[in-house]
Image (tube, rainbow, N blue to C red):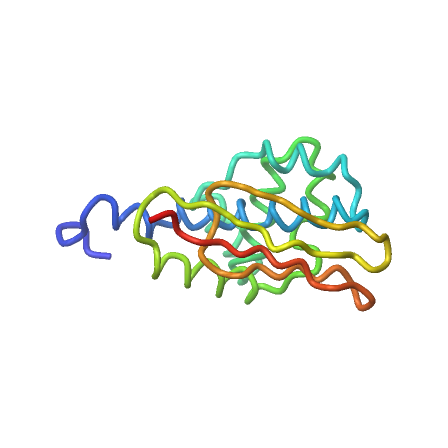
Length: 162
């Protein structure tokens, strides 16, 4: 974006730092859903939730080596996670497109800074766990968490708070 033509709020929405904050929120929601279903260890969620989003500079440095923006982001975020091993399950069951498409559509449709997640319950057929979450500050789309070949999808409907 060209700085002199960009309003501060719009510049923030489209900044790399904000993009990584949003990626962290979505990845954390997915990790929470997997942990609630017993698919990943529950003790990996809190360290990931506490980890600061990576800086654009840290992601750029790693991307010079990986040549992949999402892998660079995940590596830089893992570096901010203590213990780092807790980040091993982040992005589990997702593709890069799951993350990129969701956040791009969110940033294009965002109207105000405040937004809320309304969860559509999911069910994990393997564990029999019914999943329900309500979180603040996410994205205005449907997040589908694949819980495995024998499981139903967990859908999180995320809408802007108008």
